[in-house]
Image (cartoon, rainbow, N blue to C red):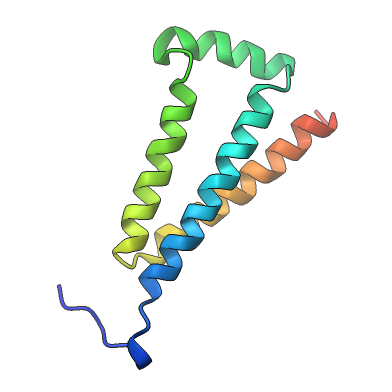
Length: 103
């Protein structure tokens, strides 16, 4: 597949890749904060899913999502990067709800 030419050698794929990487860091931080929160819903979920995925299965899923988003961002898939941004925003809202006691 032929790539488009950009002014002054700029490649938007690099910026998408960097942004996805930082969103991944944020997602892992939120994931850890929620996992260590002790919230009853989270504890029940951990007991249920650890039987199938092991104790770190949820981190494996998070890593797979990050790798997929970064891989496709490297290929220049803007839609996937935007979808990962929406996923990060939803994670942020859910984390805030759980940690602030709104649920």
